[in-house]
Length: 122
Image (tube, rainbow, N blue to C red; front, side, top):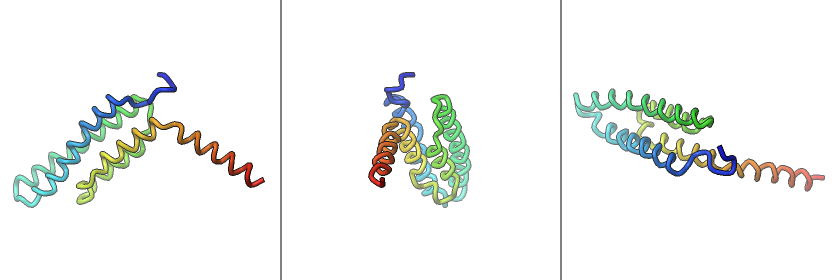
């Protein structure tokens, strides 16, 4: 793979967000219909399995790309906590992973800043 290009292309990022965003929206819908006696409980169980599927798809994709994806994993795992799952944590984790994977210059900036700070302290 080209070191100068992004690790995650725009097409890949859009495809993964097309998977993640609808599931975060469905989490909110599921939370709203959960008080309904039978339908709400069925929706909760189905969304729990959906959470597992999305977790495995995203993590497999990131592993195949050679990325760690800690932010995406954290967002996915937080989706299993009741009442916290209505927040778009999965989407935010994936966006953070995409940004961090495609911005290697941030580590270069940190190295330069550390070198400048070291020279100024002398």
